Image 1: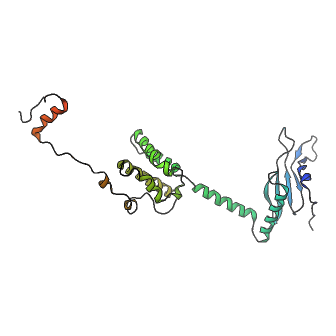
Image 2: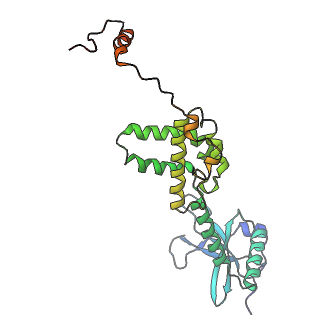
Image 3: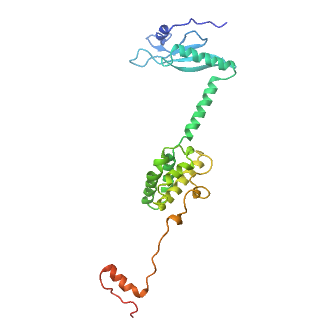
Length: 263
């Protein structure tokens, strides 16, 4: 039968520390594993202190068997995890093992899942920066890059800049475009196109799925009037050739230096 450790009190645990190194001529210390009782295999690991310190780092482990392997399962640092909580965590781990669950494998799976979620939790502004960098290599002038950046910063970022790209929906795009669609239609058209391409880039990177909410055809065209309806250009009637001298004179305030029809 395994040896049953004496159940230590909180006061006794506080005094536990690293132990002198065996055979050392100096007071050199080495890591000590102290059984604290209450749950078989529960140990307080005490490491040597850093220079100038009296007590080194201390942490809990549960040394037990999972399947046919001996495992050391970390339960947290001491005193952040007090004795009573360490015993509770050790019992929970043992219960999982009895159910056929490897606590270490389970923890790794949860950690991997969290990392995958965090990798996808990328905001629109971050993807937009990558898009701007890509476009800057295609533009012929720095001014074009500046204009693109300004348009996104002025009209897109205040509404969707801090949103995770996977969470952006059609309602967000409508909210973004509605104030400027008719008042600044040309700008709004460019902003919509850039937002659509940023979200396309996010989709290509695996950061979002489904339809692009900034798509025009069959989507936003159902909400906003077409460009030619809100940005009609009014052209002046053509000026007759014989009227050109008088027109030029009215512009310059001087008589024309030429006469139409003269040879």
